[in-house]
Length: 165
Image (cartoon, rainbow, N blue to C red):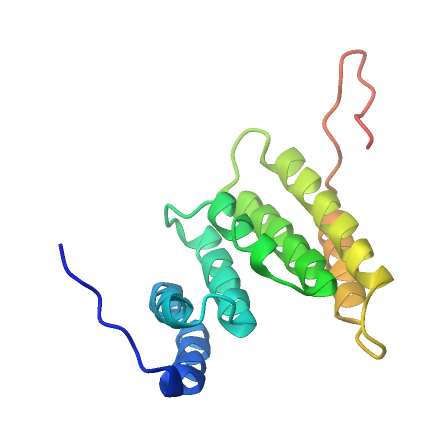
C-alpha cells in the first residue's frame, strides 16, 4: 500500500477550487480525492464536506459503484441545519433521477419515493432557510415537475390502493 501525501493547510483554498473544477469537468472521482485530502488536514472543512457529498452524488447516474449510503455518511458532519436538510434532499433527488435513468421493474415507483423524500427534506430546509435563499423551493419545484412530467405515482398496495405517506 501507499502512504498518502498530505497537502499543506495553506493549499486548501486552491485545492477546493480544483475540486469544484473537476466536478464541472464531470470527473467526480478526482473531486472526491481532493476533498479527502483536504479533510485529512481539516476534518471539519464545510466546503470540502459539501463538495465531497455532491461529487459522490454526481456518480449515482454514471454506473459507478457509489451508493447513497456513502453520501449520507457525510451529512452528520455538516454543521448548518439548513445545509444538512438541503443536501439530504439533493441526495434523494439524485437517487430518483438515477433510478429513472436506469429503468427496469419498479423504477418509476422507486423514483417517486425518492422524490417525495427529497421534497420532505427540501421543506425542512425551506423552513430554516437564510433570508433571500430560495434554493430549497427551486429544488422542491424541480422534484414536483419530474413527478408530474413522468406521471410518477406511489406503489399500489393490496387491494389496488396506492400507498401514501
